[in-house]
Image 1 (cartoon, one colour):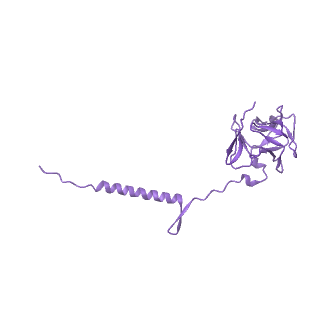
Image 2: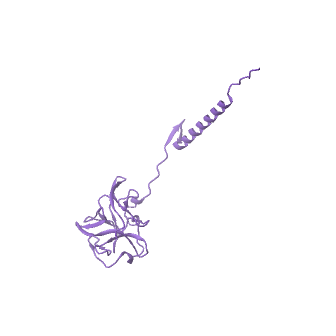
Image 3: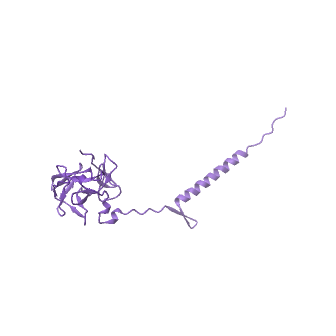
Length: 203
């Protein structure tokens, strides 16, 4: 039974599938979220290889060893895999041999496929997802370009220059807030004690 739904949407300027399929950050591949568990995976497992789905084109990329884009493959919006335009199985979450729900390319009869490393052509096997152990979920372990998974540098806080000194904008806001608070308190004291004294009239 299919347990993840896939629909195309635009996230961070990329057309990606949400699984729900989403882009966790600006990655070149899509990330799958399982509707039936907390699993979040972007590695698609075959019998002999690991793959990812390119966000922009929907092509599969073989990431075991040197990354190879399999141009004759295509993953559609329902998670179905096409090879040379013909049905070639489906990508879906399944229980692996460790009891975790991980991502698998299974053939039309439910077995895990074997993938030709040059063409991407799948061939059936007798293996099922629960025959495998230690299935990975993080494609950054396999992707050749480490920069794709690098943490972005934090942006410096905005600053202003006052009397030749550079002051961080948040600090300046705090100083202005404290100054405004002091002025408000001072005004309150003046208003409280500056009332005019009126002598009571004698009978």
